[in-house]
Amino acid sequence: MLKLQNIRKHFDGKVVLENIDLVINTGEIVSLLGPSGSGKTTLLNVILGLTKTDHGSLIFNDTDLSRVRMKDRGFNIVFQDYALFPNLNAYENIVYALKNKKGLITEKEVQEYIEFLELTPHLNKKIGELSGGQKQRVALARTLVTKPNILLLDEPLSALDGVIKESIKQRIQSIAREFKLTTIIVTHDPEEALTLSDKILIINQGHIAQYGTPEEIMHQPSNDFVKEFIIGQLQIKRRNIYHLFGEQYA
Ligand SMILES: Nc1ncnc2c1ncn2[C@@H]1O[C@H](COP(=O)(O)OP(=O)(O)O)[C@@H](O)[C@H]1O
Ligand SMILES: [Mg+2]
Image (tube, rainbow, N blue to C red; front, side, top):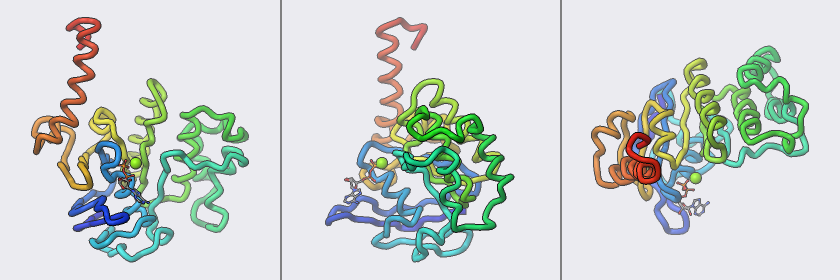
């Protein structure tokens, strides 16, 4: 279980996160959802240990990690731009972080992740030769082979579209289920959050607007911001289609 208590963070005199309380159970998929600039990436980096908080605590399985450095927390992240090394091939990228970590994972387990993500045919390709979805899968594999206790993903789907997006979404879900891996995903898209997660944390200007299951958020939005942001956006999509093609497509 991951527990955040009263997290606050400011940058240059501007408060970016305040009063963040959050409990995430082991194996849950949780989305951090909010508009651009609401503090989602900052919160993800706070959990990772990359960003220091002003105050507040972060407890993982009864251990206080608030003052524990990033590399000792045992979490890992897929950054929004993937941050892959262009001069290395896919396989070299995947195993890069294992250089100084002998014994963390066997070659057989590495191969299992590679097969799970269907990357075997692409291992010798340079990053520039891969499609968006393939890059995303390499980035996922590279993070998973470090066997993180929590998987953090910053906007993993926003650079993808259509069928590829749907397939990466399903893969993220099956990874979380198969490995009982707590997974925290940043997104600005209500539809993504609603279809992907067990729970959604809605952030508005650094404050929690609501934390609940997709059902709770849809049926019992706790305030106008949630109503506008979630239901408003979905209705706009629906209305646009309706106006163009008629009621049967709405
Ligand atoms: N390193 C930083 N230094 C100064 N301001 C920052 C830094 N990182 C983020 N911010 C500011 O904090 C706010 C929240 O940013 P961010 O967490 O990236 O939002 P989101 O991921 O929801 O779009 C923004 O106003 C952003 O400009
Ligand atoms: Mg962000």
